Amino acid sequence: MEILVIAALLGLIPAAIAKSKGRSFGLWWFFGAALFIVALPIALLMQPDQATLELQQLAEGMKKCPHCAEMIKADAKVCRYCGRDLPALDGAPQVNDSDEQAFHHWLDAQIPPIVNPTAGDLAELRKSFEWNRRNLQG
Figure 1 (tube, rainbow, N blue to C red):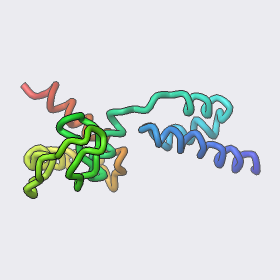
Figure 2: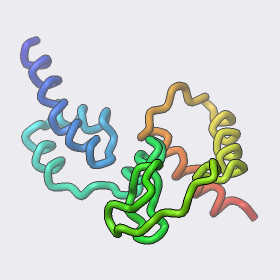
Figure 3: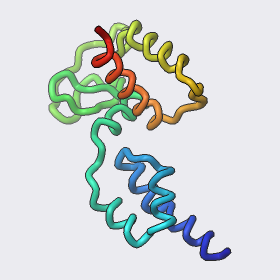
Figure 4: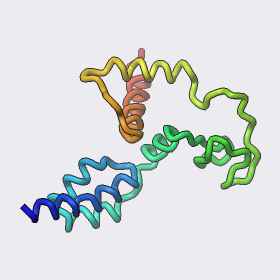
């Protein structure tokens, strides 16, 4: 019994590392608990999933600099990476309202329904939504 508890706790280490790189916490926790000695080096050496991390940052309220494409705080007036002035926001949201409404309508229509998605879940769902929109619309 103690071995299972120790394995479950050790599995948290590669899971936390993988989550910080945009991967699934649950899957990496299971992998880490089952094969910690293999999962830890893989989690440390794997490259971050930039698309997922970027979508998570967008969901957390960050935006892309229109000049250098780096992620910056939504309230920034000057980009911290390229140093250029940012266009003034006139209260308009960064995402087109009709796209956001279409995404939420698509999300509500999923079976089984998705309840309380995390930022990572939303990022994956948005990728699925964009793929469906791009590839399945005539």
